[in-house]
Length: 131
Image 1 (cartoon, rainbow, N blue to C red):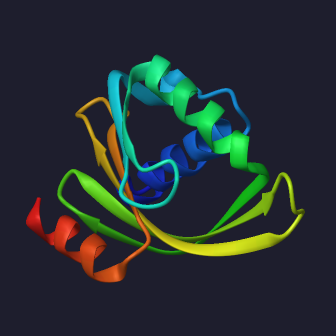
Image 2: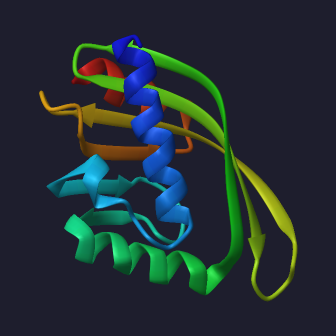
């Protein structure tokens, strides 16, 4: 399996576990950092404790979420995954589709060490090219 495919597999599996409310910490480093650069859950979340705080905040607003990958780009120790996230409001039941770009960084052991999530193409591109 190519390095890009392996990294995408790790990213997708981790994101699925995060949205399911049980982050699979075997796929990420202990000091894993998730920084969301938009929305009501914007902020930096570090380690399992931070991720569980993000989950709690996320599900105060949304009661359902799913992700579909549109494209993947690789550079050095990271990948950019362009996705469409569909969420459903807990109070309204209204579904919203959000286009996101997630920039994943990986350590030598293949585990993810950082995730930056953007919903603006220019900001995502600048962050991906700046690394």
